Image (cartoon, rainbow, N blue to C red; front, top):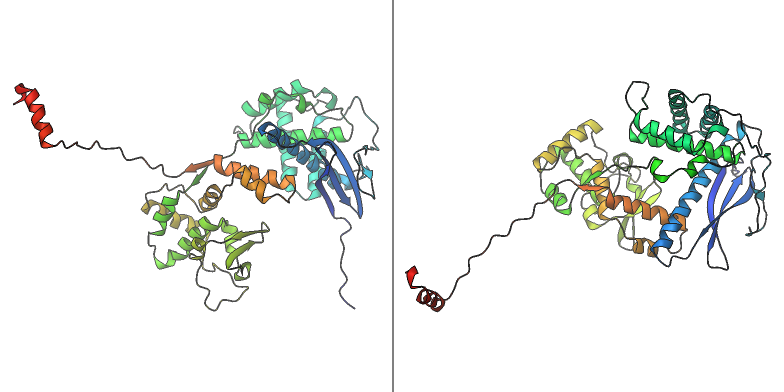
Length: 426
């Protein structure tokens, strides 16, 4: 008897899909699959034709809202084991192609005034994430509950949470909130708590505990905006300078790995697990598959020249099999950068950001490459490319050489004429 395929009936998937309308717009809906059943939910969000930059920016905001709703829906599926609520809450099962006239159906009765504490709602959020297998979401909920208690709002119910309360609490997170060790929390921690609070209130809206999310009524200046960290990148001139510095034989493989990462965009953890079978030749071009990210990168000649010799290695052998530990790599790169007159703060991760920065593509290039792919994929690539361009800091700023004024040589007759006109200069 052949091997039978083992199906996972508990597999859950929520995907963003689009439907073309006669008006030229595109309607966004969710394709949800759970326990062998497929359901659809229309979000009443629409993408307009990109006739200008304003339309492009509007579509980006709509896609961000759709992605937030998709995550909330996945969270509801994850919390099915903790509640007796049906999984198809707010959705209508359909066996045929979804239509624009689909209406949402909910099995929960609307609740105008909720007596559920805000802290309990955050705990429900944490339990749902723990069931889903996300330890980070569970820890974020615990931190937010601690911050709410520190703010003195442990008795506040959901019906008492409005835009004014959220604005004051978020201001407290930015300025006066302290961790268990007595240190003021960082901006990234405040941002994480803000996201957890918004998601918890959104779940309360989905469950009809409250009518709307009060955070959506807040002024944009009161919200916690994400601050992306700046990354050091190397210029092409600095990469060539590093290639010209000779390292001892025991350190040469670290140099090969770093230079290969600069030209391929592979991370250190991915480099340690790279095997020869992940390299393939097709149409006279070498490509590399990164299983951790499920992507394929085309390797240039500059990248290929930094690969170690294969010799008698098998397909399943590691490409970089003699790399030292992370601490040794850090010390070797530090000495290497010092010899190249570059900042000692540069680590192996700088190679990844260098590749992303120099290979960042414009909006037009990404639009041409993702012509047949979903809009969500195009939006993600545009976001990654924009961050790679804006969050990069060149490690060494090259100072322009000042121009030296050159002496002007006059002909002999001109000199004579000059002295003839100025007798006093003789």
